[in-house]
Image 1 (cartoon, rainbow, N blue to C red):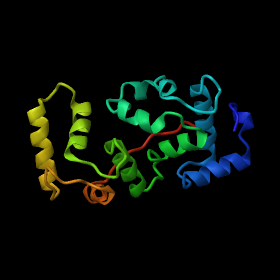
Image 2: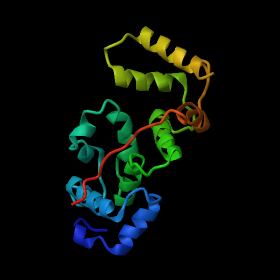
Image 3: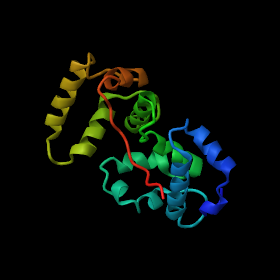
Image 4: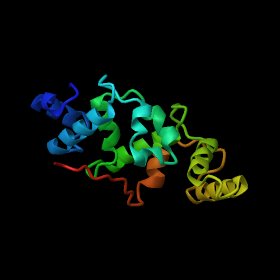
Length: 175
């Protein structure tokens, strides 16, 4: 898959579509490929975290530093898979798995209170004190039936987030 949309074959489109579990239409994949090529400034076939920073919505995202470890060095198929969690066609399971990866900063498959606190700190900045963050987070965990020393796994995230009508969608402009 080269760096111009004319180099994206029907086979490539179908392969990418299958790779992302059909969360994007073929037209959306072509649009994503065009965007990928714009971001891939050195035409190396991969997008670096720095290249991703050229997307204004990403650059100002309070979680951008956490997302960096998930996106640095993505090829086109991985880029589409990364974005597939934001598709309206993505399953709830896929969306929750994505969120879990954001929280699981060390990739050990477990999210500790400190991981949750780090994300809350990223999201709130200086708007609330550390003590307030800890109180809020402790309360939220207790409401969900967990304690401060609980290590949450993916199934816990499914239990907590699985019934709340989770919306995580972006519109892909199709030319």
